[in-house]
Length: 223
Image: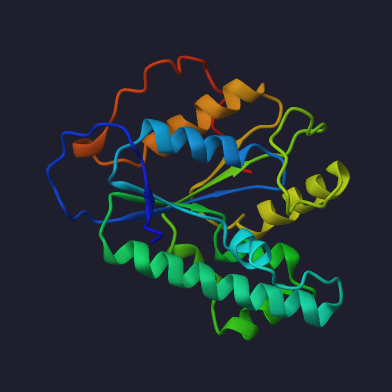
């Protein structure tokens, strides 16, 4: 039986329910999100829920991955629905932070149509969708993806991944707390900085000393 994935670090907080913050970890394929999420699992406490990538659930489960516009729309409708329901389940248990591997507006970057058409398809307004999320951490794709973990459902070239990265950044650009983890930093610095940003969303009762992550990340920037 599957359960919600949470952080595994010790926590002295005795609260069973918090006011949850929803944080999106996003960016193009090969930027290092998988490694950041694994480090988050190790460094944060059980009051941090980590949601899997909806696209991985959909495509990993056998959903056809075709390039026709209707097939892409069908996939994105499925991904959006799974994302919504994952967030709904996580919100119900009232953790301190819900860390999402991508968020609902990532779909704008993949949608074969306009942003307006995307919103009409799902009956949403961009402003309301942005307001669902407390912070957006964008992990930028480097010029070379060598050294990053291979994902069995990833099929983009580095050039395609970087183009997607730029489109995803534009999808979230109106969010007041869109924070960039720059591709110019080394991998370990990116990892350390992303963990620092995520840790900044924790309430005082769950704040954890992050030993061993002393690297100085790149300056915080708005993309």
